[in-house]
Picture (cartoon, rainbow, N blue to C red):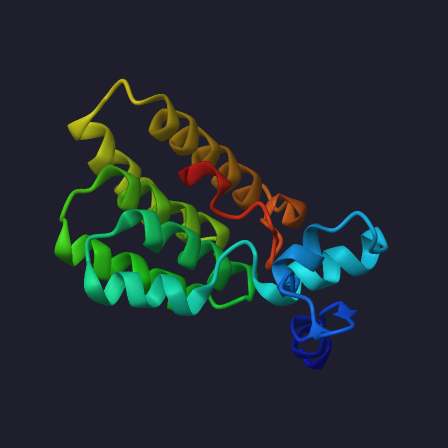
Length: 171
């Protein structure tokens, strides 16, 4: 984190002091002049995937903001905080009961945690409202397959905690 703070203060100098074209930390993360590995570390430290603070603020202002809830839940899941992710999604579902994207996202988190039966109940609830929805049908099938593999004793079927692809199915 210290690196990000230091990089955020970088600027080019000219004869009058600092250039009016100071570069933000996010500009540095996109820069081709920086080593790709360093750029990835900067991007990760900046929370490019989701600025949790801004997303939480958006949800405070609009508790039904699913476009803020899903990236926040994804970021929380990536930090191995599934209970916090579920709490965020439960809040959205309180504000907009039956929202298909929120139901799907919560089911994805439950699947990630190996709670397949609970996830499948949410998929069924969502599919009752929109039976032809391909995202829901696909995720329900994946959940059933994951549960089948887990029941067969295949531990490798469990999603990896902290996976960056978590909640990718909920877009």
